[in-house]
Every structure is written in structure tokens, then in C-alpha cells.
Length: 451
Ligand SMILES: [Zn+2]
Image 1 (cartoon, rainbow, N blue to C red):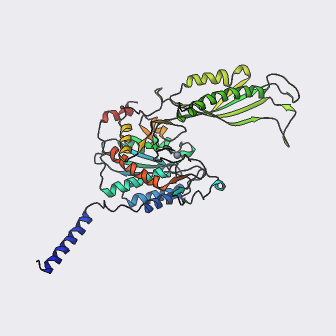
Image 2 (tube, helix red, strand yellow):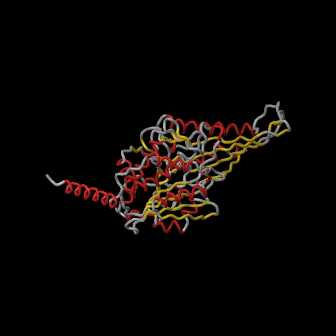
Image 3 (cartoon, rainbow, N blue to C red):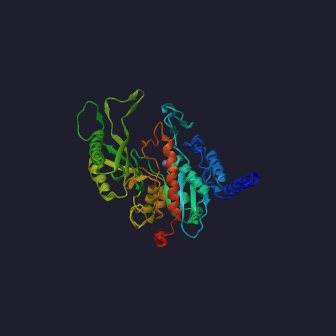
């Protein structure tokens, strides 16, 4: 038998060794309490960054404090006064390789407070674990998941080969003209030498995550009809309202044909041209409403039309001139906004999903490694900031990891399940690992320099 003193001595040495080991090795085992992770997300959601008066200052202070807590390099700057960007940098071991940019916007759309079951800036968690807040899907979830994924990877001792940037931008919800559009054209952005951008996607009602390689562009169309004015009791041809209604009927038939393809499952929402009437303007005003015995000489209707980059927009323009607002029916038209689906070289503004773009396969690999399922590549039905980076020729992919979640962006009672949020962090950890470890074929990455 060993003397008792020797046993105690061995135990002491073992304890000492364990203390030293745990101090030296990364605190891998000490997984963080999920409630702390969720509470940071809720803190971000409680900052009211709703347009048109977003509290950007508070959001920036919050993000900078988060960055400090995980020792990330951070800077905040404004291209347009009062519209701050935050850029967090995790330097890679090979800074010559193009970097990876994880991108999110800090602003959110306004709310109709009275239509919400829980106050939209309290981030209430119900008994099912759903976090209710404006921005819980669009897209404060993604911004915080980017940060939390970096936090976890740093804890695990992971070292990126490529430099990783986590960028928070202003003003996406009002078109990004003072945000991403100017940023994409800035020296600050050029210095980052970005090789791939991950921006926002959409929630998926089924178990497959949605991934986006392009987006529809808006054509905001106003058609105007003129015709002879006349007594409200008289039947005659060619009134302004008759002319306008012929057009509306034609446009509606087109709308139905597009929508039917979506309903039949032949095309995804982003692959068809959507047309929605957003205003009708006619009549002669009177103190009590409108003059009722007079047929007006002018009538207008406005339409929000969204065009996929893959659509034949020439034929659509022809249809507009010949059927929707024909001059022979006393019709004229103008665009309040008409974005091009093409870049300066006449090519559709889309990110390749085939082998010419290694980032696509790597994204799918990253998601799969985190046990996520991926749907087929889609066109985003509305606009995001990703278009400004795609216009530069950069691969930009829209991805918000929300499976089994109803699409509630811009809606009342927007929410995200906290378990789904936590799962999304794991997915981003896997993507960051895959992306920043990729040293592959840098010749393919120089594509944008040729554009
Ligand atoms: Zn968004």
C-alpha cells in the first residue's frame, strides 16, 4: 500500500495538471447556456430600428459591445450622415485570399402596433418558445447568428484561413441607396477584397432551407387613360374609365396566367412576373366626395410589377405598349421606377449556381455538415442589398436559416422560434468553417476584375 501522503500528493498533482490543462486549452467543453445566446438576440430585437427613424446609434453601440466581448476588430463609419455601418473583422491566416463577407441590415420596417399580439419591440417569448419582434426574421436574426457563430468558433479555437467580415448596414428597407449602394462603391469595401457575400433569404415553411441566387427587379408602372367627358347618364364609347378598364382586364388576365403557374407548382414565386394594382385614380372631386353625374376625362392606375432576371423583358415591354397602354386607346404610361435586370455588360444579374461558382457548392456543403437540408436555388421575389454586390460581379447568396417557419417578414406578429434560431447559429458555424478554410481555385474568384 502506498502511504497516504503519497496518494494525497498524486491527487494534488492531478488536480493541478487539470487546472493547468483547462487554462491552456480552448474552453471547448464549456458550451454556453442557450438562454444567454437567446437573451443577446432579444436585446438586439428590443432596439427600435424601424424606418423612417431607426435608432441606429443604439444598434451600433450594441454591436460594438458584442464585438469587444469576443475580441473582434471593429469599426463604425458613415458614408451618409446618420447612417452608420459596422464592420467586424476576423483576420485570416492568409490575408491575400479574397475575404468572406457576412452581411445584414440593422433597420426594420415600421409596425402597426395595435395589430400585434405582443409589443413588437419587447421580444416576448411565448410558452412555445417563439420570439415575437419586428426584425426577428428580417433580419436581426441573421446578423446575430453571424456574430454568435463567430463567438462559438473562437471559443473552439478555430482559425480562419480567409479573412471573415461581419458587416451591419443601414437603410436596406428604404432601398439601400444611402447604404449598400454607396458602400459597394466605397474605398472601404474595395480594401476588404471580398470574394463572396452572404446576405438575407427567406423563411421556409418546410424542412428545407431556401437559398437565393438572384432577385426580381421592380417596375413601378402608371398607366393613364383619357377620353371625352360627358353626362353621367349618357352611354357613349371611348370614355377614360372604359379605356382604363380594358387595360386593367388585360393586365389582370396576364396576372392570372402568371399566378396560375405558381399555384400549379410549375414555377416558383420568384420565377414569374408578378403584377399587383396599387392605386386607382379617377373622378371629379366635390365637397362631399365625387361629382356623380359626370364621366371624368382622365383615369389612372398604378401597378407594382416585379420582373425575374430570367424573364424576356423585351416582350413584356411590347405587351405594355401594344396591349396594356396602347396609344390607339388614348393611353399613355410612365415608370415611377424601372430597374434593369441586366448588368453593364447586358447579362442577367444573377449568381451562378453551377460549378463555375465554387461558393455555391461550398454553401450547400456547409449546410449539410450541420445536418440542414437545402432547397433548389431560387430567385428572391423582392429586392435585397445583394443586388449591389451582384452588380459588381461578386457571387452573392441570399440565405436566412429558418426552416419550418411561416414567412412573416414585414407582417404583423413576426416571430422566430428560439430553437430554430439556435440551429441557425450551428449552420453558420459550419458555413464559416467551410468558407474560410477554402483555399481552392482563386482564378475563378478574379472574375469580377474582368467585368
Ligand atoms: Zn431584409
